[in-house]
Image (cartoon, rainbow, N blue to C red):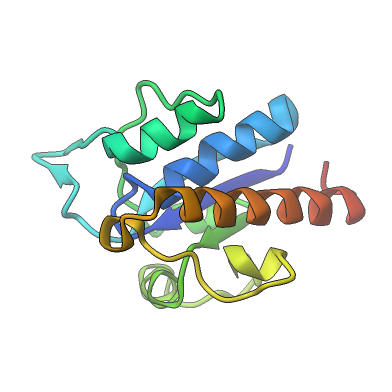
Length: 153
């Protein structure tokens, strides 16, 4: 089974949105998780829950993220996952630093699976959770199409 890890800075907005949107789209055909490149949302080893406006945006679309807490991206994740999807260029740079590179070409950018390209803006700063949902959803749809076309599911 193909394993996918979605990554953003804090693992409380974009990457958990991607995790749960993709779980909704793919069902049990994939193993899906998410993680953070930063430590801000993990206090004394305990991750914060999904940021309430992000959870509310998911809920508007009938998707629950109940129980999800921020988790830290670690070096060993590179070996555990088949694809590791970052939300923006800073995430990609941080991921490559944590992993010490990308020798197997597993690290991808979410919006590269759409016709628009670019980055998924951080709604923590933009406050546009609906736009983030749209971008993440479109990225997940494109990623799912890529996986199906390449026989990965």
